[in-house]
Amino acid sequence: MPHRRSSLLLDEKRSALMVIDLQEKLYPVIPEASKIEREIIRLTDAATLLSIPAAATVQYPRGLGALVPSVQSVFPAPEHKLVFSAAVCRQALDAWLKQGRDQIVICGIETHICILQTVLDLLAEGLRPFVAVQAVGSRHRTDHEMALQRMRDCGATLIGVESILFEWLQTAQRSEFKAISQLVKSS
Image (cartoon, rainbow, N blue to C red; front, side, top):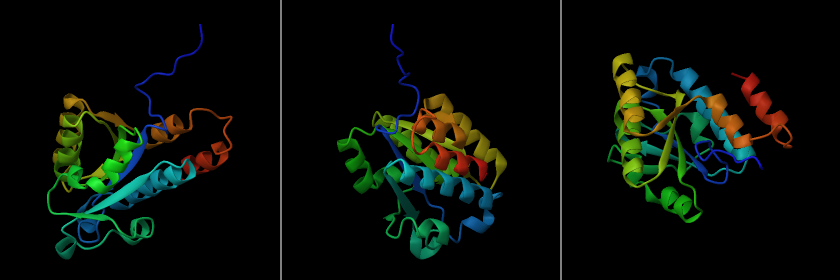
């Protein structure tokens, strides 16, 4: 009997990456923001290597500023929003849906506001959100932990960044294996 890959695993052909609101004025109040930023950069680098589409959003940029420079360089024109859920940003989502991409990897801030509301809206649309746990954060630990628990309880998949990278890759036989391994070592 041939091997059958689980549909619960991320698949690069079904995946997309959404970076939510890693903005200049929010960044300083998030504990471990620099670690979250590094994990987001690892995700964006891997998505680029594997040709997985990615997009970013900004919440009320006039008040909260632009994306942090490292992310702004990857996403020079993020989608702007006033609604907390990034699911209202349809430019990327609609394109991904047309491509059959139903697995949306989520990262950014804040876990209990924009991340949570986005994840719940994506679930309501029948999509499969995967929350990169080391790449999301909130100002307060309790808010962060409760939001992760609620998202998991509602059907989202909580996943580590390295798991994402290797699920996208699937095999060490791929030409991108060494580059992905370097991203893993850079953590």
